[in-house]
Image (cartoon, rainbow, N blue to C red; front, side, top):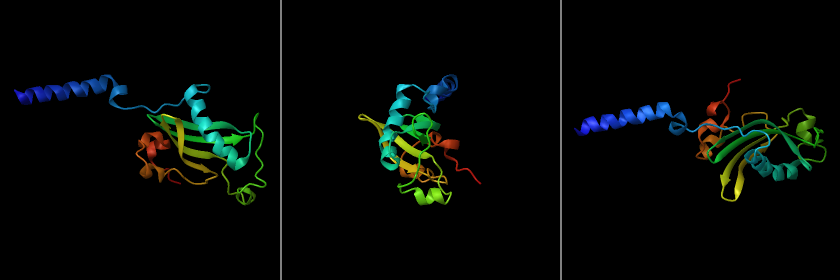
Length: 153
């Protein structure tokens, strides 16, 4: 009798997962422009970006992925209204002059009771900077582009 009850419970759990996929597996969200969540995530990046590049800054979002308490972001910083950032007198000037600067901020954030906290931040990487982050933190791989699979060149 116990075996039958166990099998019935397993079948019921499998059916519930198939009928309610949101409960069975978490889904990556992409907060839409203007949403409070998107604004909070981008605001968390703004201070560090202004510290690196000067202000004021606005972001063009390339990718923003949220899963539970984790967020992955790739954004292109610019001056308000689409103005260009000049790297003269920044630590990025030599890389810019050499053509070795990708003008993208890549970041991993975690939501805390105090708000979004930047765990990892990179500006200018020309490679897959987020790959080591996957093993440094208990982040679901789905929060990263390509589900965490590193693209091959």
